[in-house]
Length: 239
Image 1 (cartoon, helix red, strand yellow):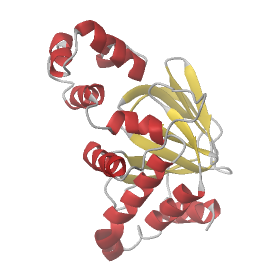
Image 2: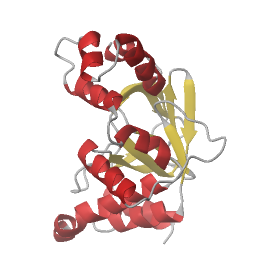
Image 3: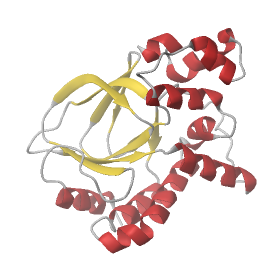
């Protein structure tokens, strides 16, 4: 199995620029044939893996450029700028976007903790707020291929889709960004729950004091921890 095989699957199932569904909940393929500069976007909790081309994301002035050597991990909803600076009809961008569902990820993290499957952060590893790039490894590549190869079969998708997706998510949690992601989906992460609540209720009035109280923190502590994770104050994030 190789990334070229994954690329072939995506190329066969995408004919126009966009994010077509695969039939597996939370898994979308994408293709881009136009060079687009970074423009405002909101990334919901997800992993974005590129198999051909280069994608660019900017968060709070920090620029992340990644290709098929790394995949992007965004465990909480984040307002970013995203673009496809090098895509063209002759050199299209191909990739896959996988949603990180709170319930599924939380269950996986708890199972890993119960089984003693936690891996400490490497010495000197940088904790990046909001977004992290992770190197492809064999476990992730193999699991992603196994997931995408069934996307063309309705019965395989129904019977095997959830299990194959779980395998991919497990490989991500075991990967280079695993400890970073587990900080979001581990038990008791009140900031992540607050972000999820805000993202789902943008039309409702937002009270920072209430969010802090529901998280069991003072306003000052909540503000500090919120900004550490998102790089923005709660008010900036809501706006």
